[in-house]
Length: 532
Image (cartoon, rainbow, N blue to C red; front, side, top):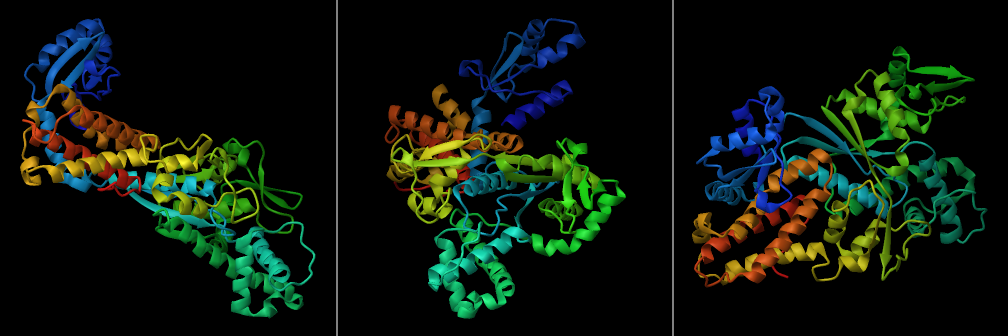
């Protein structure tokens, strides 16, 4: 609807016209400050211009009423216009709000957690936010590829093998062994050690071939943890188009380094090679190759982003944890020195999550440490509530929530409340003596102004999706669905529907609402319920 009105007004005034939603519903469905844009050109007051422009919209099929208010033009949509869009939404069904394919190609990378342990609840936030953004973008017609970057090279992978080796000796075989200063802890390491014993035999834990055994355990353990991670993601309906291995990309390091050197992006100090990351706003230049010739962690990111940009997408979006904030300027500097345009890279950060249960910090049952595991929470509350809570909050602020709030069955639980509206509508349709076909043919021109407002709200899904994606704020879709469900419940409680003179019309309005809820929830990764 908004795009239709915007297109018409832009063509009429031969310029891009801004369309807004008035804060006061009595002011109309849409408003534009076009008179302010014309004031300088026409050398008249915006108030006078707006009042004169009103006359140009008499009997227009889009609008039931056009008014001037303090220089703004306010538009109330006509019944015919709303009814036409209602029919289009029902015909579209699950494709409501889906646009034609856009030409812009986007590479979206998210999660990319080290394969050294199961995903924790912080990873879950980035995973669900990224997947929701992906689903919204694809619904809008963007060509988006999703990618998980596997950090399977370097010290952390060797540490995983060492942890399995040490814990296997102590906890599984009962041997005495000195604990290293740093190693991964948790029940999952014990489980890996037991599986390693079955796969490789006891000899894998012998110290005779210490380095060789740890290397073998490192690579095997990484592959096993990647399976766990994929299962963690699948539990909340997340799958990636590609998994990219850092270790496999390292064979391309020399070529990436040569690009940096050719573009004067590196220099040597005391045997170390530094990236000129201060060119991109970093507080100091960063080491990318140590004195011993071994590349640093940043080198892996450089190789990966060279690989990304060689694939020639129009836009690259990375979703990182907030602790990676300092890497943005470093990576962007590297991209420029690799010969690419770093403005094509957009980095979105997700903040930390803390979980309560009964008002107390959630007990960590599967791993000693400071993390709540993602699969523990999914097992307790399910995928839908977790997906909704993360999609409904802006990712760049810290988040705390109580698991009990996600399980209550009342209006305080948004997933329940939205699903209840959808189930109510299905129940009404089943109670009616009219068939769905008869209901869909009803004319909505004669519904009340209040019900027309509900129809208008239900038809706003396409513009909400565009706004959510363009602003990267998935909470706008979640908030929209909450408000739509709330308004439908109010309509339901204040209306006699079955048996009324306008039964078909009110049921058709309900079908439009239900379709919007169903499509919106699906984009959030949630299947709408028909029974509660």
